[in-house]
Image (cartoon, rainbow, N blue to C red):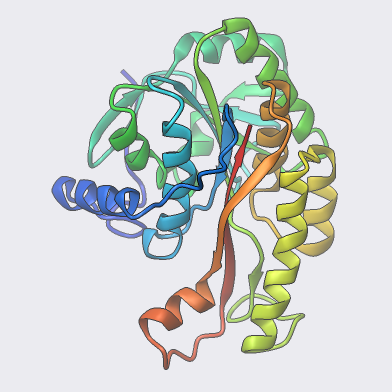
Length: 290
Protein backbone atom coordinates (compact mmCIF):
# COMPACT_ATOMS: atom_id res chain seq x y z
CA UNK A 1 0.00 0.00 0.00
CA UNK A 2 1.20 3.51 -0.82
CA UNK A 3 2.04 5.34 2.43
CA UNK A 4 2.82 9.05 2.58
CA UNK A 5 5.37 9.31 5.44
CA UNK A 6 5.78 12.35 7.71
CA UNK A 7 8.03 15.03 6.24
CA UNK A 8 7.97 17.75 8.94
CA UNK A 9 7.75 15.69 12.15
CA UNK A 10 10.38 16.87 14.66
CA UNK A 11 10.35 20.28 12.97
CA UNK A 12 6.82 21.68 12.83
CA UNK A 13 5.44 19.29 15.45
CA UNK A 14 6.74 16.50 17.73
CA UNK A 15 8.05 13.39 16.02
CA UNK A 16 7.73 10.98 18.95
CA UNK A 17 4.28 9.35 19.29
CA UNK A 18 3.75 10.05 23.00
CA UNK A 19 4.93 13.65 22.76
CA UNK A 20 2.95 14.27 19.57
CA UNK A 21 -0.29 12.95 21.08
CA UNK A 22 0.22 14.76 24.38
CA UNK A 23 0.84 18.11 22.68
CA UNK A 24 -2.08 17.69 20.26
CA UNK A 25 -4.41 16.79 23.12
CA UNK A 26 -3.16 19.73 25.19
CA UNK A 27 -3.81 22.18 22.36
CA UNK A 28 -7.28 20.78 21.73
CA UNK A 29 -8.21 20.77 25.42
CA UNK A 30 -7.21 24.42 25.73
CA UNK A 31 -9.80 25.48 23.12
CA UNK A 32 -12.97 27.08 24.48
CA UNK A 33 -15.60 26.93 21.77
CA UNK A 34 -17.81 29.89 20.94
CA UNK A 35 -21.38 29.31 22.10
CA UNK A 36 -22.72 31.00 18.96
CA UNK A 37 -21.28 28.48 16.50
CA UNK A 38 -23.52 27.86 13.47
CA UNK A 39 -25.98 25.02 13.94
CA UNK A 40 -24.42 22.89 11.19
CA UNK A 41 -20.77 23.22 10.21
CA UNK A 42 -19.51 21.83 6.92
CA UNK A 43 -15.89 22.93 6.96
CA UNK A 44 -13.26 25.41 8.01
CA UNK A 45 -9.86 27.01 7.52
CA UNK A 46 -6.76 26.16 9.59
CA UNK A 47 -3.30 27.75 9.65
CA UNK A 48 -0.33 25.45 9.06
CA UNK A 49 2.81 26.82 10.72
CA UNK A 50 4.71 25.03 13.47
CA UNK A 51 2.41 24.09 16.32
CA UNK A 52 3.97 26.65 18.67
CA UNK A 53 2.73 29.37 16.31
CA UNK A 54 -0.53 28.16 14.84
CA UNK A 55 -1.48 24.98 16.69
CA UNK A 56 -3.96 26.76 18.95
CA UNK A 57 -5.94 28.19 16.02
CA UNK A 58 -5.77 25.00 13.95
CA UNK A 59 -7.11 23.17 17.00
CA UNK A 60 -9.97 25.64 17.33
CA UNK A 61 -11.20 25.00 13.79
CA UNK A 62 -10.98 21.24 14.06
CA UNK A 63 -12.46 21.01 17.55
CA UNK A 64 -15.42 23.10 16.40
CA UNK A 65 -15.98 20.75 13.46
CA UNK A 66 -15.73 17.75 15.78
CA UNK A 67 -18.76 18.93 17.77
CA UNK A 68 -21.01 18.00 14.85
CA UNK A 69 -19.26 15.33 12.81
CA UNK A 70 -18.65 11.99 14.47
CA UNK A 71 -16.99 9.85 11.78
CA UNK A 72 -16.40 12.02 8.76
CA UNK A 73 -14.41 11.82 5.60
CA UNK A 74 -12.20 14.90 5.68
CA UNK A 75 -11.27 16.53 2.39
CA UNK A 76 -8.04 18.40 3.08
CA UNK A 77 -7.32 21.29 0.72
CA UNK A 78 -3.75 22.45 0.95
CA UNK A 79 -1.54 25.38 0.04
CA UNK A 80 0.84 24.75 -2.83
CA UNK A 81 4.24 25.96 -1.57
CA UNK A 82 6.18 23.78 -4.00
CA UNK A 83 4.37 24.81 -7.19
CA UNK A 84 3.72 21.17 -8.12
CA UNK A 85 -0.07 21.35 -8.09
CA UNK A 86 -1.53 22.09 -11.51
CA UNK A 87 -5.22 22.56 -10.76
CA UNK A 88 -5.96 20.09 -7.99
CA UNK A 89 -3.28 17.52 -7.08
CA UNK A 90 -5.03 14.53 -5.50
CA UNK A 91 -3.42 11.96 -3.22
CA UNK A 92 -5.72 9.13 -4.28
CA UNK A 93 -4.39 5.86 -2.86
CA UNK A 94 -3.11 4.30 0.31
CA UNK A 95 -2.72 6.13 3.60
CA UNK A 96 -1.04 9.06 5.34
CA UNK A 97 1.24 8.37 8.27
CA UNK A 98 2.11 10.56 11.24
CA UNK A 99 3.79 9.69 14.55
CA UNK A 100 0.28 8.66 15.68
CA UNK A 101 -0.19 6.02 12.99
CA UNK A 102 -1.97 5.91 9.64
CA UNK A 103 -5.23 7.25 8.22
CA UNK A 104 -6.60 5.65 5.08
CA UNK A 105 -7.34 7.61 1.92
CA UNK A 106 -10.97 7.51 0.77
CA UNK A 107 -10.16 5.95 -2.58
CA UNK A 108 -13.77 5.86 -3.76
CA UNK A 109 -14.15 9.60 -3.23
CA UNK A 110 -10.79 10.18 -4.93
CA UNK A 111 -11.96 8.22 -7.97
CA UNK A 112 -15.18 10.25 -8.15
CA UNK A 113 -13.26 13.53 -8.01
CA UNK A 114 -10.76 12.45 -10.66
CA UNK A 115 -13.52 11.25 -12.96
CA UNK A 116 -15.70 14.34 -12.83
CA UNK A 117 -13.21 17.07 -13.72
CA UNK A 118 -9.96 16.82 -15.68
CA UNK A 119 -8.46 19.71 -13.72
CA UNK A 120 -7.96 17.25 -10.85
CA UNK A 121 -5.01 14.91 -11.31
CA UNK A 122 -3.63 12.01 -9.32
CA UNK A 123 -0.31 13.48 -8.19
CA UNK A 124 1.12 12.08 -4.93
CA UNK A 125 4.47 13.71 -5.70
CA UNK A 126 2.93 17.14 -5.04
CA UNK A 127 2.31 16.08 -1.43
CA UNK A 128 5.67 14.50 -0.63
CA UNK A 129 7.37 17.60 0.78
CA UNK A 130 4.36 19.84 1.40
CA UNK A 131 3.65 20.59 5.06
CA UNK A 132 0.37 22.50 4.85
CA UNK A 133 -1.82 19.43 5.36
CA UNK A 134 0.59 17.20 7.25
CA UNK A 135 0.64 19.44 10.33
CA UNK A 136 -3.15 19.07 10.70
CA UNK A 137 -3.38 15.30 10.48
CA UNK A 138 -2.34 14.46 14.09
CA UNK A 139 -5.16 16.67 15.40
CA UNK A 140 -7.56 14.83 13.11
CA UNK A 141 -6.30 11.49 14.41
CA UNK A 142 -6.97 12.55 18.00
CA UNK A 143 -10.45 13.91 17.22
CA UNK A 144 -11.62 11.28 14.71
CA UNK A 145 -9.66 8.03 15.10
CA UNK A 146 -10.12 5.90 12.00
CA UNK A 147 -11.67 8.55 9.78
CA UNK A 148 -10.67 8.73 6.12
CA UNK A 149 -8.86 11.51 4.28
CA UNK A 150 -8.78 12.95 0.79
CA UNK A 151 -5.77 15.29 0.53
CA UNK A 152 -5.76 17.71 -2.43
CA UNK A 153 -3.30 20.50 -3.14
CA UNK A 154 -5.01 23.47 -4.83
CA UNK A 155 -3.15 25.74 -7.23
CA UNK A 156 -3.79 29.47 -6.54
CA UNK A 157 -5.35 29.88 -9.98
CA UNK A 158 -8.48 31.77 -11.07
CA UNK A 159 -10.52 28.56 -11.31
CA UNK A 160 -9.81 27.44 -7.72
CA UNK A 161 -13.34 28.33 -6.63
CA UNK A 162 -14.77 26.26 -9.51
CA UNK A 163 -12.75 23.27 -8.30
CA UNK A 164 -14.26 23.76 -4.85
CA UNK A 165 -17.79 23.86 -6.25
CA UNK A 166 -17.09 20.57 -8.01
CA UNK A 167 -15.90 19.03 -4.76
CA UNK A 168 -19.07 20.20 -3.02
CA UNK A 169 -21.22 18.57 -5.68
CA UNK A 170 -19.31 15.29 -5.49
CA UNK A 171 -19.71 15.30 -1.70
CA UNK A 172 -23.46 15.89 -2.02
CA UNK A 173 -23.78 12.98 -4.43
CA UNK A 174 -21.92 10.70 -2.03
CA UNK A 175 -24.39 11.67 0.66
CA UNK A 176 -22.32 10.79 3.74
CA UNK A 177 -20.55 12.91 6.33
CA UNK A 178 -17.86 14.92 4.55
CA UNK A 179 -16.01 17.93 5.94
CA UNK A 180 -13.83 20.36 3.99
CA UNK A 181 -10.72 21.68 5.74
CA UNK A 182 -8.57 24.26 3.96
CA UNK A 183 -5.06 25.17 5.02
CA UNK A 184 -3.45 28.60 4.75
CA UNK A 185 -1.38 31.14 6.60
CA UNK A 186 -2.01 34.80 5.89
CA UNK A 187 0.31 37.79 5.35
CA UNK A 188 4.05 37.09 5.55
CA UNK A 189 5.67 40.41 6.47
CA UNK A 190 9.05 41.64 7.69
CA UNK A 191 12.12 39.67 8.64
CA UNK A 192 13.22 37.87 5.46
CA UNK A 193 9.88 38.76 3.80
CA UNK A 194 9.06 42.13 2.19
CA UNK A 195 8.04 44.87 4.64
CA UNK A 196 5.73 47.32 2.80
CA UNK A 197 4.06 48.24 6.08
CA UNK A 198 7.22 49.22 7.91
CA UNK A 199 9.11 47.60 10.75
CA UNK A 200 8.15 46.57 14.26
CA UNK A 201 4.63 47.38 15.45
CA UNK A 202 3.94 49.32 12.25
CA UNK A 203 4.46 46.08 10.35
CA UNK A 204 2.19 44.22 12.77
CA UNK A 205 -0.57 46.78 12.24
CA UNK A 206 -0.16 46.50 8.48
CA UNK A 207 -0.31 42.70 8.67
CA UNK A 208 -3.46 42.72 10.78
CA UNK A 209 -5.26 45.11 8.41
CA UNK A 210 -4.08 43.16 5.37
CA UNK A 211 -5.27 39.89 6.89
CA UNK A 212 -8.65 41.29 7.85
CA UNK A 213 -9.59 41.79 4.22
CA UNK A 214 -8.99 38.11 3.49
CA UNK A 215 -10.85 37.04 6.62
CA UNK A 216 -13.84 39.14 5.55
CA UNK A 217 -13.88 37.39 2.17
CA UNK A 218 -13.95 34.05 3.97
CA UNK A 219 -16.74 35.13 6.29
CA UNK A 220 -18.87 36.37 3.40
CA UNK A 221 -18.16 33.20 1.36
CA UNK A 222 -16.74 35.34 -1.45
CA UNK A 223 -14.73 32.50 -2.97
CA UNK A 224 -14.41 34.10 -6.38
CA UNK A 225 -12.65 37.18 -4.95
CA UNK A 226 -9.98 35.33 -2.97
CA UNK A 227 -7.37 34.79 -5.68
CA UNK A 228 -7.44 38.41 -6.88
CA UNK A 229 -7.19 39.69 -3.30
CA UNK A 230 -4.24 37.44 -2.49
CA UNK A 231 -2.49 38.35 -5.74
CA UNK A 232 -2.91 42.05 -5.02
CA UNK A 233 -2.22 42.06 -1.28
CA UNK A 234 -0.05 38.95 -0.67
CA UNK A 235 -2.25 37.99 2.27
CA UNK A 236 -2.54 34.22 1.84
CA UNK A 237 -0.01 31.55 0.89
CA UNK A 238 -2.91 29.13 0.36
CA UNK A 239 -5.26 31.31 -1.66
CA UNK A 240 -6.27 28.36 -3.85
CA UNK A 241 -7.09 26.32 -0.77
CA UNK A 242 -9.18 29.16 0.67
CA UNK A 243 -11.14 29.70 -2.55
CA UNK A 244 -11.81 26.00 -3.03
CA UNK A 245 -12.77 25.40 0.61
CA UNK A 246 -15.14 28.37 0.72
CA UNK A 247 -16.79 27.31 -2.56
CA UNK A 248 -17.08 23.67 -1.48
CA UNK A 249 -18.65 24.66 1.84
CA UNK A 250 -21.03 27.04 0.08
CA UNK A 251 -22.08 24.22 -2.28
CA UNK A 252 -22.61 22.05 0.81
CA UNK A 253 -25.09 24.50 2.33
CA UNK A 254 -22.95 26.99 4.23
CA UNK A 255 -24.35 30.52 4.27
CA UNK A 256 -21.66 32.31 6.27
CA UNK A 257 -18.25 32.01 7.86
CA UNK A 258 -17.27 32.69 11.45
CA UNK A 259 -13.78 33.68 12.58
CA UNK A 260 -12.97 31.86 15.82
CA UNK A 261 -9.66 33.59 16.37
CA UNK A 262 -6.76 35.49 14.87
CA UNK A 263 -3.09 35.84 15.85
CA UNK A 264 0.30 36.46 14.29
CA UNK A 265 3.82 35.23 14.85
CA UNK A 266 5.19 38.59 16.02
CA UNK A 267 2.77 38.71 18.95
CA UNK A 268 3.07 34.99 19.71
CA UNK A 269 6.88 35.11 19.89
CA UNK A 270 6.82 38.16 22.17
CA UNK A 271 4.45 36.49 24.59
CA UNK A 272 7.12 33.80 24.96
CA UNK A 273 10.25 35.96 24.59
CA UNK A 274 9.45 39.67 25.14
CA UNK A 275 12.89 40.87 24.02
CA UNK A 276 12.98 39.01 20.70
CA UNK A 277 14.18 41.29 17.88
CA UNK A 278 13.03 39.34 14.81
CA UNK A 279 10.34 41.40 13.09
CA UNK A 280 8.77 38.60 11.04
CA UNK A 281 4.97 38.76 11.21
CA UNK A 282 2.89 35.91 9.77
CA UNK A 283 -0.87 35.99 10.25
CA UNK A 284 -3.02 33.02 11.30
CA UNK A 285 -6.81 32.64 11.44
CA UNK A 286 -9.34 30.01 12.46
CA UNK A 287 -12.55 30.18 10.41
CA UNK A 288 -15.53 27.80 10.21
CA UNK A 289 -18.39 27.65 7.72
CA UNK A 290 -21.99 26.71 8.34
